[in-house]
Length: 281
View 1 (cartoon, one colour):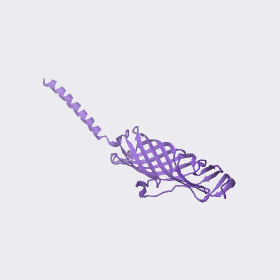
View 2: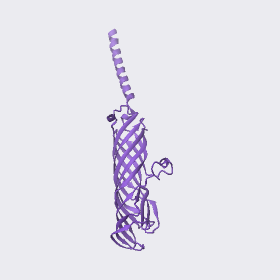
View 3: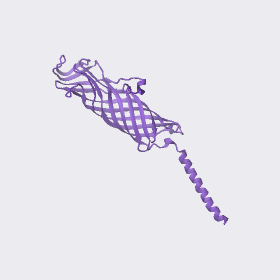
View 4: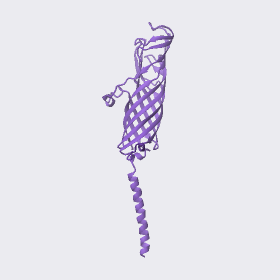
């Protein structure tokens, strides 16, 4: 009789210990061990570089190409405007909201608010015809021309807005640095591919015509990025990225007249530092 009682009791005791051990493993599993189902959000700033670009200007009384134009960004530097409501578009900024569909892969939407300024007073070759806009009238064939403010001022400064969708991958490399408790500090590497629309607010003054500065969907872009993500105390992130891409804008508004427009294509590069968080709902 005692033997019949001991065996079931021992079996129940063994199952209980096993379940407690499994439950303890679940409880000890780190928040950072899995990403699937997490949301990410980040906000930061950037510096930019642009390749040379041919800019084609077309209107009812002109059709000309500015060749190999140089351009630069318009940095604000470290400034309170980055976090001041109503002033966040003054500096060059980056916003992104993402969701992990697996532990490694995510989809995101974002806005890179870049600023493109054609270098003023540069000399560029011009080819084409200008008529009805003295003193610039005439035929141009690779003619070196000074880009004065009277002739041409051309900027996407509010801004060169790249609105994109990105497909990315993230890998935890904390073990490379001997980090065991990733819930306190985690090191990740990121890669991503993006594509989207260009929605610039182009500030143009062209041959004395009325200044134009309105938002307009002007083209499309693609991008690649790679970076390092530091996750601190499970929820807070600091990320540094290198990003490069291609922009093609065949329909840029240049004056108040809808018959006037410009087109250009170029490559861009960004260095980005952003701050954010990761969370589950």
